[in-house]
Each structure stands twice: as structure tokens, then as C-alpha cells.
Image 1 (cartoon, rainbow, N blue to C red):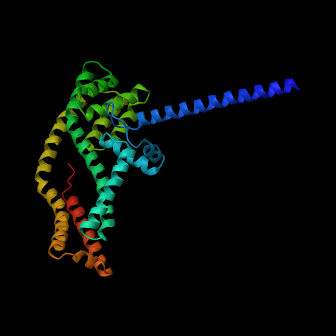
Image 2 (tube, rainbow, N blue to C red):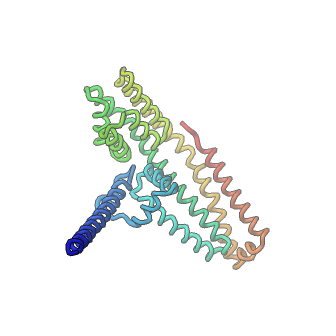
Image 3 (cartoon, one colour):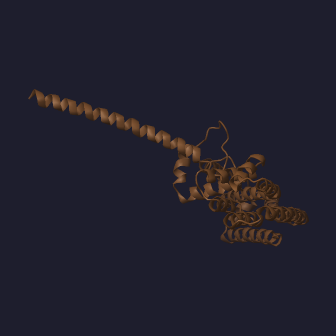
Length: 312
């Protein structure tokens, strides 16, 4: 009887110890996982040293969804020091603020409209940041091609030349090449690492440079001569793009001025006749007229932007 009691007590104690060890291992694993998520949260970006990430719980949950993955991919191409969770919270706060301001200043009908415009503006902001980063990277391509040509002419391997260029060039080219060098360091092929770079920052100039490097790496050949010729071509394209952008600057301003005039007319109408927007949007025909007007402004904006977009 005493043996059974001692055995029971021993098994109970052993079970308690195992439970405590299991809880400790689980909590340690969760802490390590959270730390790993924080380190990988800025995939495609350089995290700010010492900055504490906000909204970690929202960020972890958001990353499991398709929306979070799309936001993460877009943020990776913009170079912004934000996690998907931070961007999502800021976007929701901005949409709510626009909703309240439009509903209070104009009419309650304009609240949801302003919220939808806020969502579009958040996506447009990411696209603008991405295009801005691509433009900066394109401007650095001639210097990048020159560094690679000099390094390969000196007898360095292409992997070493990419690492050297990553150290010498400023952002965004330096950051992007650092990612390429990191991929190469962990065993990725040059084709895959450069292909990811071309997908992240798509442009004709970068595709030409990547294709030149990949083909030279596969089949060999006069990579130095190809890179030097490419450097001259990229310099000429850089000047041409600058001239085209200068010529089209007035058209670009017009595209943004038209919607501003529409919003200004609404504010002017409400100032001249207080309550006019409430009465107008209180009827179905008034709501339809406002929606059609907004759609026409959006179409005009898109058409002007499309006509002013010239690929060089």
C-alpha cells in the first residue's frame, strides 16, 4: 500500500515538473517566435536601430492574412520603415478621421465617400513611394553599372562586385544590392537573387542590366565591354527621362488640380448656402448626381494621368 502511495506521489511530482517544463518551453518558444517575427517584419527594408515596433499583436495577426501579405510586399518595395500592422492601424485611423471630417464639414453622405477615398489614397501613397524609390534606383543604375564594370575588369567575381557596389552606393541601390548579396551569401543563385530584385523594382533599365549580368554569368563573354556600353546607354536614358518629366510637369499638376477644384466648389457652395449639401444629398437624385460627379472626376484624373505617361 505504501509503495502504491509513494508511486502515485512520484508520478504526480514528475507530471508537475513536466508540466512546468512544458509551459516554460512554450513561453520561451513564443518569445523567440515573436522576436523572429520582429526581425523579419521589415523584409525588404532596413529597420531603424533601437525603434520599438508598435501594434505587434495586430502585425502578427495581419501577416497571416492575404491582405497582410499584400501590404508587406508593397512596403518592401517602398523602403518605408513601417510594419504591415503599423501601416494598417495608421490607415484605419486616417480613414476614420476623413470620414468624421467630411461628415461634419460637408454632409453625412460624404462620410463613406471620404472613407473610400482614404483607402484609395493609402494605396496610392504606397504606389507613389514605390515609384519614387524606383526612380531613384534608375538614376543610380549608371553608377552601379560603372562600379560593376570596374570590379569585374579588376578580376573580381560578380558576387564580390555586387557586394562592393552595395557598400559604395547610397540608398536605395545600396540597400537593394545588400539584399541581393545576402541572398547570394545563403546559397541563392545569381539568377534568383537578381530576378527578385527586378520583381521588387520593375523597370526597363534594371531588366536590361539584370539580363546582361545573368547571361554573362551563364555563358561568359565580354561582361566588361557590355557593362561599359550599358553605362553610356543608361546615362543617355537618364537625361531623356529628365527632359520628358520636365515637359509633362504642367500636365501632371493639371491632373491633380481638377479634383481639388471639385472639392473647393463643394466647400464654396456649402459656405454660400449653409445646409445645401444636406438637402441635396437627402434625396436619391442628389446622391446619384454626387456619385456620378465623383466618378467623372476620377475618370478625368485617370485619363489625364494616362495621356501624360510616356515610357522612355
